[in-house]
Amino acid sequence: MNDAPVIVHADDLFAGYLPGIDILNGCSMEVRQGELIGIIGPNGAGKSTFLKSLFGLVPIRKGTVKLGTEDITNMRADELVKRGIGFVPQNNNVFPSLTVMENMEMGTYQNPKSFKAAWERIGDLFPKLVDRKNQRAGSLSGGERQMVAMGRALMMDPQVLLLDEPSAGLSPDRQDETFVRTREINKTGVTVIMVEQNARRCLQICHRGYVLDQGTTAYTASGQELLKDPKVIELYLGTLGA
Ligand SMILES: Nc1ncnc2c1ncn2[C@@H]1O[C@H](COP(=O)(O)OP(=O)(O)OP(=O)(O)O)[C@@H](O)[C@H]1O
Ligand SMILES: [Mg+2]
Image 1 (cartoon, rainbow, N blue to C red):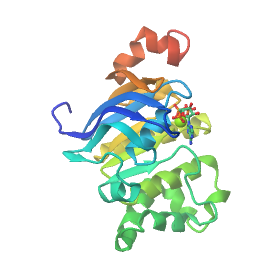
Image 2: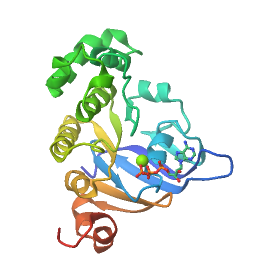
Image 3: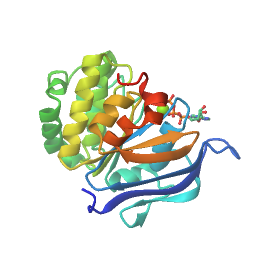
Image 4: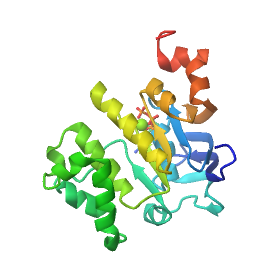
């Protein structure tokens, strides 16, 4: 794993929504091909902002993002999709008035010819979506909606998938399913960068984790090491030994 080439490299990012106010102040991350990376940290730390900045949705004021050797800093989202980056946002991640199938079609709008094969692939991964293909996404359960959002991002067959809190708001069973699916997707060769509030579960499945605090990537280590780190336990995992 460790000698795989670096696929995403964020170097010392400063970014924010309002002029003069940086939410990110020094975020760095180096991700190797095939890695499953978890990002944990308290509410408001800037985790979503970090993912959005990688996907061209929050202006980066300083620092660079590279995809392989290409500089993709502040590149538009549609250009990033063409280059193989998929993003599942934390909120409002489906088109509620469209059916499941129509949501999937939106996933391949840049290359409609790829729809049929992609839909078959996604159907194998999420059989539930095939059963529900004619149902409006807005009438699905939270877990099913999450599948639609993930499925849509996967329709373009991305090489890198950015996931923002895929397990949020789901029942424990459904949360578990999300982690299992994420792991499966990663095993097919997709590099995954996931933000998660369920820090314990996230660190259990990820190869490496980053702790993000107050807009800065404080430290990184393997998921297993972070699970044992007293500071991480105290701040993010709750009671010792749980
Ligand atoms: N659209 C926006 N405009 C202005 N400020 C924003 C916007 N979105 C987020 N912020 C601010 O940026 C900071 C970081 O927010 P962000 O959503 O990145 O945190 P987070 O780590 O993802 O938190 P959570 O765990 O609650 O999802 C917060 O102080 C928030 O108020
Ligand atoms: Mg967030």
